[in-house]
Length: 108
Image 1 (cartoon, rainbow, N blue to C red):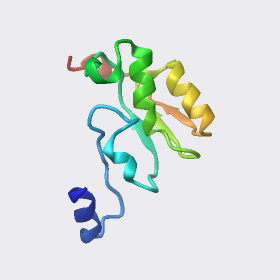
Image 2: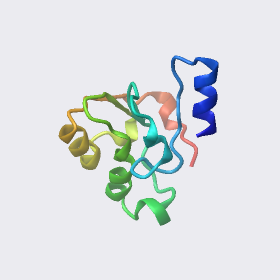
Image 3: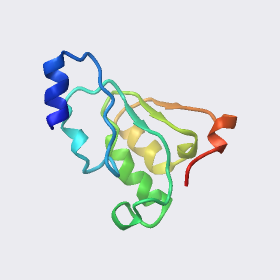
Image 4: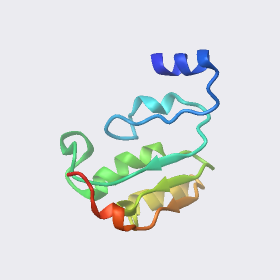
């Protein structure tokens, strides 16, 4: 919240906000008019909160997708049904970033 107030005070036109561990209940959802949403990757981190399967994790992370706004998804999200279903339900176009050689070097 403090960061948002500081962005406003500084007159920022745009800011990139990173979700904590997931989108559905994340504090960044207080932003009323985002330009787009981004889900960079799916992995088995924070399973104690997000779920035990990639579908459960994708479902939670898809909470950042907003109605009628584009959502950019990284290569590991390709074909994720929970993300696709939420984007379809909210009329959000998915912009899929293709695999590139540099994506093979992911920190685990």
